[in-house]
Image (cartoon, rainbow, N blue to C red; front, side):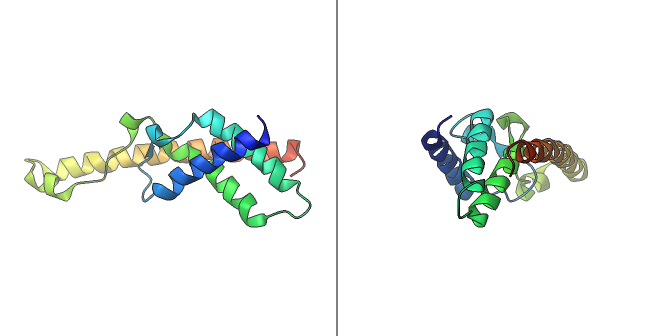
Length: 134
């Protein structure tokens, strides 16, 4: 991928991150992404190499790219994202306690999944840095 394409892709992805900041660990809708996760992954790596090897390295941009890379783990298939808990709906249900417990259980599973995927991305990024002298 050329640098110009990478910059365009990363910029569009960055707009999604700014417009849809993560407020919880219940996931983000994958349908919000302007490109597939692999394309964004590759684009960020291209920018990391460019930024990381520049004569005057922009540390803030370099760290921002790393964080954006790791946040890819929070984007899940839309049906897997746990919606925000609606207290009003819960209070109207016949079984408030069990509904809330099920909600928390789903949140824990998704949070664990995001954590596992983030760990994979951290390892991938560490290897990428080693391979590219960053």
